[in-house]
Image (cartoon, rainbow over all chains, first blue to last red; front, side, top):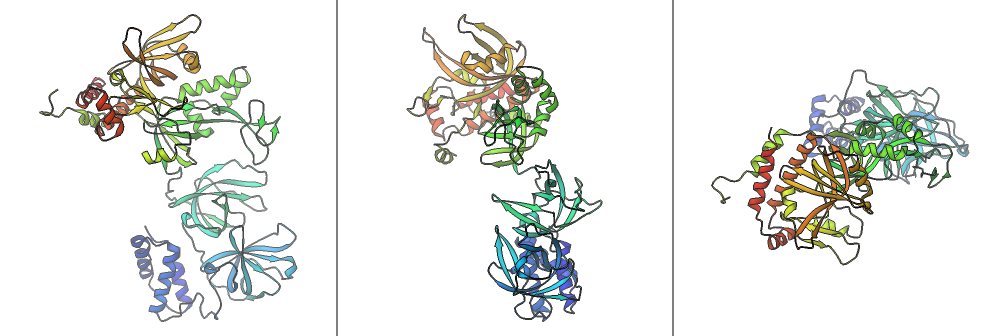
Length: 418
Length: 193
């Protein structure tokens, strides 16, 4: 694995700020050693290398050049602390509720954190892209995400100098609730479930994938599929133990002509076998139209939560069992793959169902005939014992396997008498 | 794997469909229940040393007969490179009956079903498969199945004598693993182009 050039750049800049020049090869060499040889997380490696070099060059290993005692690196802030930080405001957003005068993100060379200015604090709003020194700000937590609170006692000082600031780009795998910057490829676009949502889908880098959303806001641009982006200061949110990225307040730049290998964008679980069962939830189904619900309706258009629905959305899916001869595993196949596997499009299924009293059964029968009993390989992720299929390929007859099996089964010459 | 099975004992766990050649299934005689409950699953012990509650097979349908007046049921023969499977489907296998009705002999079919051992009035023991699902497939699928069944059978034979089920099989059946290995080999040779 190659060290991320941004990290080398950032360490180098930190030393230049203190008047020392460290060869980049030296920095990247030390980083490589820690990251590739010892498997130390990049974040931690950066800290170790910086401290080591600080000692070597006889510099004080504090986070900022000549920083007064008490000033803290944003990365190290802990909930409950009263802190002084110096950082650059990299995003401000309109307050969603009246009690908050302003919210945004402030960053230093070590990391970034959301800040909130409460209306009753009577503090003038911060300006985007300006450096500030904040004294006596309070770190607290909102929904598990650390936040910086600016209150009436916080001393806010605008700094005139514009220092160099490189966001700390980290692998998707290392993202934690809070604020993070990544370099990732937009690999899947999903249908927005809410009218205020501009775009949602999946981002991936070499270490993993993560869901993202962008809410509708003025001047917000959509991402272009299969393009690599540098995404600075996205909010990492946690819901039901899963992380997602909110890019609404983030800055993102396409990297023209760039490409990166995305790790297991389809999940890491794989089962090769045959579909031996397709449940009654398979085939053409109706989904509840209530925003964010999307549950399958019963035959009588009844949603388990929202009762009878007159309107609905059509969908095609497979809920069944894949069996490799040793184990039977539940699978859930969404529309695009169900269409490919069955050779029937959603529109064709709808036409069948609408023009024929037995249409639903007919669709299911045809799908069973096209899908079951064939050798396939499904990839995806297993959740609660069910494989959520993201990719499915047919398995062809393998002459090499045939030869290998013949060898394995062949009676040993001169062995036991036949 | 046994421990895993134990820990999930209370939770419903679908029995995997074992891959078995007709020649091996034909020799199976022992059917038993796992537990005293009326709903306990019933297993057939394969001579290669594994219990099966459900099997998956692919082959050519060579014969189809509709039987019974009041209670209509189908009997079907499906041929693999080692022999013949006897498949049936009655009114309790409504889906399989409907599927069989639409399939003509000569077609390759994939069958998912439960093996059952019956003793005929004259004392002969006969094993058949009660079909759950019968799907028309192409010949390539049947060839792939032969590889699958061969690999699974060889795997069972490799563990012969080291698992509870296979020790039980060694006590109960006279057929020896060498002969079974030969059967797998013959089936593989038969599908050579």
